[in-house]
Image (cartoon, rainbow, N blue to C red):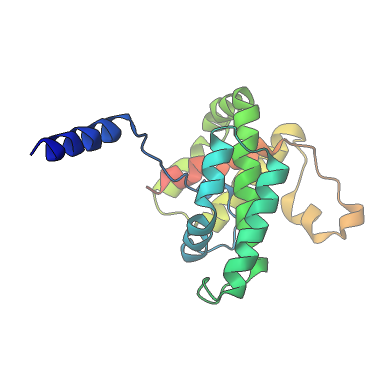
Length: 188
């Protein structure tokens, strides 16, 4: 009886002091535009432990990206990716790690971008809430972002040119990431 009480006390003490691990999710606004939810989930399942370490500042971008690539490559080789290849899953992981790390290093840039984009993209956000196609919304949002730097920018015209001749305004990646986040929130 005494042994059982000690054992139960020990289990209770260990349970009370243990920390609950959580698996970090891939920010959906970071994913490549052509990624499916199934591919994102597969990638998340493979690299969630790495994302946890990135989110808690225990891994920087380069090491995290290398570890993620290795885990994805091993999962593909072991046929654990439902037929999705390295070339599909790796960009999902790389983007997630890059965005998570950037958000961690520059939170004020993301806060300012969100503040600015809620106003700049208000009409597009409303259209998305009312059923606008997401691909059209993203293109419109990106064009508005570029036009906030250069009012004469024409998305279709510039992206129809050979890459050598394009004249695209310089815009921080946080603007596009936050724009996608706001548009994704509008459909939820």
